[in-house]
Image (cartoon, rainbow, N blue to C red; front, side, top):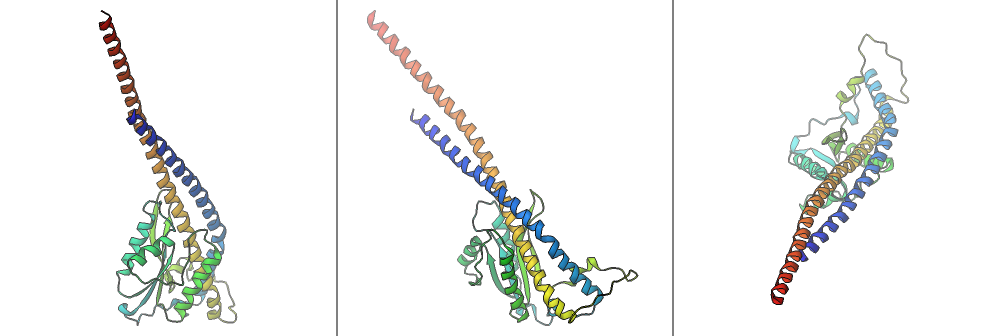
Length: 297
Protein backbone atom coordinates (compact mmCIF):
# COMPACT_ATOMS: atom_id res chain seq x y z
CA UNK A 1 0.00 0.00 0.00
CA UNK A 2 2.91 2.36 0.65
CA UNK A 3 3.92 2.06 -3.01
CA UNK A 4 0.40 2.98 -4.09
CA UNK A 5 0.39 6.04 -1.84
CA UNK A 6 3.73 7.18 -3.25
CA UNK A 7 2.46 6.89 -6.83
CA UNK A 8 -0.77 8.71 -5.96
CA UNK A 9 1.21 11.49 -4.27
CA UNK A 10 3.43 11.86 -7.33
CA UNK A 11 0.40 12.02 -9.65
CA UNK A 12 -1.12 14.81 -7.54
CA UNK A 13 2.20 16.68 -7.55
CA UNK A 14 2.47 16.47 -11.35
CA UNK A 15 -1.13 17.68 -11.70
CA UNK A 16 -0.38 20.70 -9.50
CA UNK A 17 2.69 21.50 -11.61
CA UNK A 18 0.63 21.13 -14.79
CA UNK A 19 -1.85 23.72 -13.50
CA UNK A 20 1.03 26.18 -13.05
CA UNK A 21 2.53 25.57 -16.51
CA UNK A 22 -0.89 25.88 -18.13
CA UNK A 23 -1.55 29.17 -16.30
CA UNK A 24 1.86 30.53 -17.40
CA UNK A 25 1.05 29.54 -20.98
CA UNK A 26 -2.19 31.54 -20.88
CA UNK A 27 -0.50 34.59 -19.32
CA UNK A 28 2.32 34.61 -21.89
CA UNK A 29 -0.21 34.23 -24.70
CA UNK A 30 -2.08 37.33 -23.52
CA UNK A 31 1.10 39.40 -23.08
CA UNK A 32 2.43 38.43 -26.50
CA UNK A 33 -0.82 39.50 -28.17
CA UNK A 34 -0.70 42.87 -26.40
CA UNK A 35 2.92 43.41 -27.49
CA UNK A 36 2.05 42.71 -31.12
CA UNK A 37 -0.77 45.24 -31.03
CA UNK A 38 1.50 47.92 -29.54
CA UNK A 39 4.09 47.36 -32.26
CA UNK A 40 1.52 47.48 -35.06
CA UNK A 41 0.08 50.71 -33.66
CA UNK A 42 3.41 52.58 -33.67
CA UNK A 43 5.19 51.11 -36.72
CA UNK A 44 3.60 53.49 -39.32
CA UNK A 45 5.08 56.57 -37.62
CA UNK A 46 8.63 55.22 -37.59
CA UNK A 47 8.33 53.92 -41.15
CA UNK A 48 7.37 57.48 -42.09
CA UNK A 49 10.54 58.77 -40.42
CA UNK A 50 12.57 56.25 -42.41
CA UNK A 51 10.86 57.49 -45.55
CA UNK A 52 11.72 61.11 -44.74
CA UNK A 53 15.40 60.25 -44.17
CA UNK A 54 15.37 58.43 -47.49
CA UNK A 55 13.86 61.49 -49.23
CA UNK A 56 16.56 63.77 -47.83
CA UNK A 57 19.32 61.40 -48.94
CA UNK A 58 17.67 61.12 -52.34
CA UNK A 59 17.77 64.88 -52.84
CA UNK A 60 21.13 65.43 -51.15
CA UNK A 61 23.19 62.29 -51.86
CA UNK A 62 26.47 64.08 -51.07
CA UNK A 63 25.37 65.34 -47.66
CA UNK A 64 27.73 64.51 -44.78
CA UNK A 65 26.25 64.17 -41.32
CA UNK A 66 27.69 62.91 -37.99
CA UNK A 67 25.02 60.19 -37.74
CA UNK A 68 26.40 58.63 -40.95
CA UNK A 69 30.07 59.06 -39.99
CA UNK A 70 31.71 55.62 -39.86
CA UNK A 71 34.95 57.04 -38.36
CA UNK A 72 37.06 54.80 -40.56
CA UNK A 73 40.32 56.39 -39.38
CA UNK A 74 39.94 54.81 -35.92
CA UNK A 75 41.72 51.40 -35.82
CA UNK A 76 39.61 48.33 -35.09
CA UNK A 77 41.35 47.72 -31.74
CA UNK A 78 40.57 51.26 -30.56
CA UNK A 79 36.95 51.48 -31.66
CA UNK A 80 34.50 51.92 -28.78
CA UNK A 81 31.67 49.48 -29.43
CA UNK A 82 28.44 49.51 -27.43
CA UNK A 83 26.01 46.62 -27.24
CA UNK A 84 22.47 46.92 -25.91
CA UNK A 85 21.66 43.35 -24.89
CA UNK A 86 17.96 42.59 -24.44
CA UNK A 87 17.42 39.49 -22.30
CA UNK A 88 14.54 38.41 -20.07
CA UNK A 89 14.04 39.22 -16.41
CA UNK A 90 13.48 35.54 -15.64
CA UNK A 91 13.93 32.10 -17.13
CA UNK A 92 11.46 29.33 -18.01
CA UNK A 93 11.56 30.47 -21.65
CA UNK A 94 13.45 27.66 -23.33
CA UNK A 95 16.64 28.75 -25.13
CA UNK A 96 15.54 32.40 -25.42
CA UNK A 97 18.10 33.91 -23.01
CA UNK A 98 20.85 31.44 -23.95
CA UNK A 99 20.73 32.42 -27.64
CA UNK A 100 21.01 36.15 -26.84
CA UNK A 101 23.91 35.66 -24.44
CA UNK A 102 25.73 33.40 -26.89
CA UNK A 103 25.39 36.02 -29.65
CA UNK A 104 26.70 38.79 -27.39
CA UNK A 105 29.70 36.69 -26.36
CA UNK A 106 30.59 36.42 -30.06
CA UNK A 107 30.51 40.23 -30.31
CA UNK A 108 32.69 40.60 -27.20
CA UNK A 109 35.28 38.32 -28.82
CA UNK A 110 35.78 40.80 -31.68
CA UNK A 111 38.52 43.50 -31.61
CA UNK A 112 37.60 46.78 -29.94
CA UNK A 113 36.78 48.40 -26.61
CA UNK A 114 33.42 46.96 -25.70
CA UNK A 115 30.82 48.64 -23.51
CA UNK A 116 27.85 46.62 -22.34
CA UNK A 117 24.36 48.00 -21.74
CA UNK A 118 22.00 45.26 -20.57
CA UNK A 119 18.20 45.41 -20.56
CA UNK A 120 16.86 42.52 -18.48
CA UNK A 121 17.79 41.22 -15.03
CA UNK A 122 18.86 37.75 -16.13
CA UNK A 123 21.45 39.12 -18.57
CA UNK A 124 22.83 41.49 -15.94
CA UNK A 125 23.30 38.64 -13.47
CA UNK A 126 24.98 36.45 -16.10
CA UNK A 127 27.58 39.01 -17.22
CA UNK A 128 28.17 40.27 -13.66
CA UNK A 129 29.07 36.75 -12.52
CA UNK A 130 31.66 36.59 -15.30
CA UNK A 131 33.12 39.96 -14.22
CA UNK A 132 32.26 41.70 -17.48
CA UNK A 133 31.90 45.47 -17.10
CA UNK A 134 28.28 46.61 -17.38
CA UNK A 135 27.01 50.18 -17.33
CA UNK A 136 25.50 50.33 -13.83
CA UNK A 137 23.40 53.43 -14.65
CA UNK A 138 21.55 51.51 -17.34
CA UNK A 139 19.09 49.62 -15.10
CA UNK A 140 16.10 48.74 -17.26
CA UNK A 141 13.69 45.81 -17.20
CA UNK A 142 12.01 44.28 -20.23
CA UNK A 143 8.54 44.09 -18.72
CA UNK A 144 5.93 46.24 -20.48
CA UNK A 145 8.21 48.09 -22.95
CA UNK A 146 7.17 51.70 -23.45
CA UNK A 147 8.10 54.42 -25.90
CA UNK A 148 9.26 56.60 -22.98
CA UNK A 149 11.80 53.95 -21.96
CA UNK A 150 12.92 53.53 -25.57
CA UNK A 151 13.52 57.29 -25.78
CA UNK A 152 15.59 57.18 -22.60
CA UNK A 153 17.77 54.44 -24.06
CA UNK A 154 18.00 56.10 -27.49
CA UNK A 155 18.94 59.48 -25.99
CA UNK A 156 21.79 57.90 -24.01
CA UNK A 157 23.15 56.15 -27.09
CA UNK A 158 22.91 59.15 -29.45
CA UNK A 159 24.47 61.49 -26.88
CA UNK A 160 27.40 59.16 -26.24
CA UNK A 161 27.86 58.62 -29.98
CA UNK A 162 27.91 62.35 -30.82
CA UNK A 163 30.28 63.07 -27.91
CA UNK A 164 32.75 60.49 -29.21
CA UNK A 165 32.30 58.14 -26.26
CA UNK A 166 31.03 55.48 -28.66
CA UNK A 167 31.96 54.73 -32.27
CA UNK A 168 29.43 51.97 -32.96
CA UNK A 169 26.15 51.06 -31.31
CA UNK A 170 24.42 47.69 -31.69
CA UNK A 171 21.33 46.16 -30.15
CA UNK A 172 21.13 42.40 -29.61
CA UNK A 173 17.57 41.12 -29.44
CA UNK A 174 15.27 38.32 -30.58
CA UNK A 175 13.03 38.74 -33.60
CA UNK A 176 9.87 36.67 -33.89
CA UNK A 177 9.63 35.53 -37.50
CA UNK A 178 6.41 33.62 -36.78
CA UNK A 179 4.78 31.69 -33.95
CA UNK A 180 7.43 28.96 -34.20
CA UNK A 181 10.66 30.54 -35.46
CA UNK A 182 12.54 32.92 -33.15
CA UNK A 183 15.94 34.28 -34.21
CA UNK A 184 18.49 36.17 -32.13
CA UNK A 185 20.04 38.91 -34.23
CA UNK A 186 22.23 42.01 -34.08
CA UNK A 187 20.95 45.36 -35.40
CA UNK A 188 23.29 48.29 -35.95
CA UNK A 189 21.83 51.53 -34.57
CA UNK A 190 24.72 53.95 -35.13
CA UNK A 191 26.28 55.05 -37.36
CA UNK A 192 23.40 54.82 -39.83
CA UNK A 193 24.05 52.93 -43.05
CA UNK A 194 23.06 54.72 -46.25
CA UNK A 195 22.46 51.33 -47.87
CA UNK A 196 19.56 50.68 -45.49
CA UNK A 197 17.73 53.67 -47.03
CA UNK A 198 18.61 52.89 -50.66
CA UNK A 199 15.50 50.74 -51.15
CA UNK A 200 13.39 53.90 -51.37
CA UNK A 201 15.67 55.80 -53.77
CA UNK A 202 13.99 56.46 -57.14
CA UNK A 203 15.66 56.10 -60.58
CA UNK A 204 17.20 59.21 -62.11
CA UNK A 205 14.59 59.46 -64.90
CA UNK A 206 11.66 59.68 -62.46
CA UNK A 207 10.10 62.92 -61.24
CA UNK A 208 11.52 64.20 -57.96
CA UNK A 209 9.33 66.44 -55.85
CA UNK A 210 10.81 69.70 -54.66
CA UNK A 211 11.39 69.97 -50.91
CA UNK A 212 12.48 72.84 -48.72
CA UNK A 213 14.53 71.92 -45.65
CA UNK A 214 14.40 74.62 -43.01
CA UNK A 215 16.62 75.92 -41.51
CA UNK A 216 18.98 73.37 -43.11
CA UNK A 217 19.20 69.72 -44.09
CA UNK A 218 21.59 69.10 -41.18
CA UNK A 219 19.14 70.59 -38.70
CA UNK A 220 16.32 68.44 -40.05
CA UNK A 221 18.52 65.36 -39.72
CA UNK A 222 19.41 66.39 -36.17
CA UNK A 223 15.70 66.29 -35.38
CA UNK A 224 14.63 63.21 -37.35
CA UNK A 225 17.45 60.74 -36.69
CA UNK A 226 17.17 60.62 -32.86
CA UNK A 227 13.44 59.88 -33.21
CA UNK A 228 14.26 57.22 -35.78
CA UNK A 229 16.79 55.60 -33.42
CA UNK A 230 14.21 55.72 -30.62
CA UNK A 231 11.77 53.95 -32.92
CA UNK A 232 14.26 51.21 -33.74
CA UNK A 233 14.98 50.69 -30.04
CA UNK A 234 11.28 50.57 -29.25
CA UNK A 235 10.64 48.09 -32.04
CA UNK A 236 13.44 45.85 -30.80
CA UNK A 237 12.18 45.99 -27.20
CA UNK A 238 8.65 45.04 -28.22
CA UNK A 239 9.89 42.32 -30.58
CA UNK A 240 12.04 40.89 -27.80
CA UNK A 241 9.17 41.07 -25.32
CA UNK A 242 6.83 39.26 -27.70
CA UNK A 243 9.54 36.71 -28.55
CA UNK A 244 10.22 36.01 -24.87
CA UNK A 245 6.57 35.26 -24.16
CA UNK A 246 6.24 33.23 -27.34
CA UNK A 247 9.25 31.17 -26.26
CA UNK A 248 7.76 30.79 -22.78
CA UNK A 249 4.46 29.69 -24.33
CA UNK A 250 6.21 26.94 -26.27
CA UNK A 251 8.22 25.89 -23.20
CA UNK A 252 5.10 25.76 -21.00
CA UNK A 253 3.14 23.87 -23.65
CA UNK A 254 5.95 21.33 -23.89
CA UNK A 255 6.01 21.05 -20.08
CA UNK A 256 2.23 20.59 -19.95
CA UNK A 257 2.34 17.90 -22.64
CA UNK A 258 5.15 16.12 -20.77
CA UNK A 259 3.12 16.32 -17.55
CA UNK A 260 0.11 14.76 -19.28
CA UNK A 261 2.29 11.96 -20.61
CA UNK A 262 3.84 11.39 -17.18
CA UNK A 263 0.40 11.27 -15.53
CA UNK A 264 -0.71 8.58 -17.99
CA UNK A 265 2.41 6.51 -17.26
CA UNK A 266 1.97 6.94 -13.49
CA UNK A 267 -1.72 6.03 -13.77
CA UNK A 268 -0.76 2.75 -15.42
CA UNK A 269 1.73 2.05 -12.64
CA UNK A 270 -0.89 3.01 -10.04
CA UNK A 271 -3.47 0.64 -11.52
CA UNK A 272 -0.95 -2.19 -11.70
CA UNK A 273 0.14 -1.63 -8.11
CA UNK A 274 -3.48 -1.42 -6.99
CA UNK A 275 -4.36 -4.58 -8.89
CA UNK A 276 -1.37 -6.39 -7.42
CA UNK A 277 -2.38 -5.26 -3.91
CA UNK A 278 -5.97 -6.45 -4.43
CA UNK A 279 -4.76 -9.76 -5.83
CA UNK A 280 -2.46 -10.23 -2.84
CA UNK A 281 -5.31 -9.50 -0.41
CA UNK A 282 -7.55 -12.00 -2.18
CA UNK A 283 -4.76 -14.58 -2.10
CA UNK A 284 -4.24 -14.00 1.62
CA UNK A 285 -8.00 -14.32 2.32
CA UNK A 286 -8.19 -17.54 0.31
CA UNK A 287 -5.13 -18.94 2.08
CA UNK A 288 -6.65 -18.08 5.46
CA UNK A 289 -9.94 -19.71 4.51
CA UNK A 290 -8.13 -22.88 3.49
CA UNK A 291 -6.21 -22.91 6.73
CA UNK A 292 -9.42 -22.59 8.76
CA UNK A 293 -11.02 -25.35 6.70
CA UNK A 294 -8.09 -27.70 7.44
CA UNK A 295 -8.35 -26.98 11.17
CA UNK A 296 -12.05 -27.93 11.20
CA UNK A 297 -11.30 -31.21 9.48
